Amino acid sequence: MDTVNTIHIPGVGVACLHRSRRARRMSISVTASGEVRVTLPHGGTVSQAEAFLCERSAWVAAHRQKACLLRLHHKRLTGIHRPVSRKNAEILLRERLDHLARKYGFPCNKVSIRNQKSRWGSCSADNNISINQKLARLPDRLIDFVLLHELVHTRVKNHSKDFWLELGKYVCDDVETLRREFRQYRLDLL
Image 1 (cartoon, helix red, strand yellow):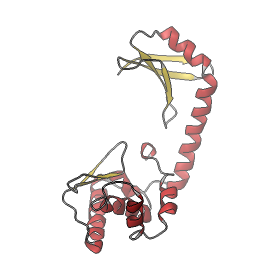
Image 2 (cartoon, rainbow, N blue to C red):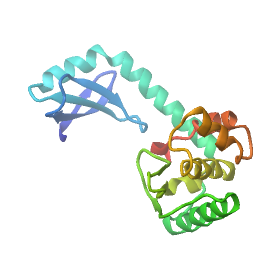
Image 3 (cartoon, rainbow, N blue to C red):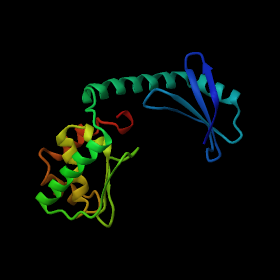
Image 4 (tube, one colour):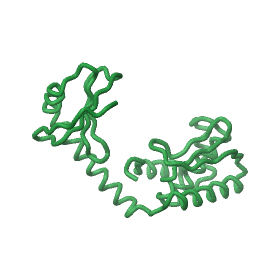
């Protein structure tokens, strides 16, 4: 997807236009930072994008406001994010994961700590665990929740009822309470 240009629409503001060969229809999205993006299919014109944005200016305004409120809520949740360098995040998360794996006897092969865009963590079929370095910025109980979640996947490879019951044996609080709290944090805002 290549950026075509930007346009300014009264009531909407600046929008970035992207042309995509895969897009079948025009679409609008508002990012977590409040940026408006219009995706144009291969035959779409700038004037069509302008008309499309004008028709949907109320939708854009509502979603921009929602993004702004979400950022404020997220900032309040995390305070000023725990400043954690990549190196310190890796040390903290590796040590904590190793401790939990030994304490509860979980098998764990390879561990990688990376900056991921869409996942907090994952566990492969070979029990290789990948953890997002941004996890180190969350409260300790939520760090443990994610690490234990991935460690439990070394025994139960899905999200069945058995998985959640197994996870409940190891976490410090009720699983549903932790899940609700955890859902308030967004990777794209950290």
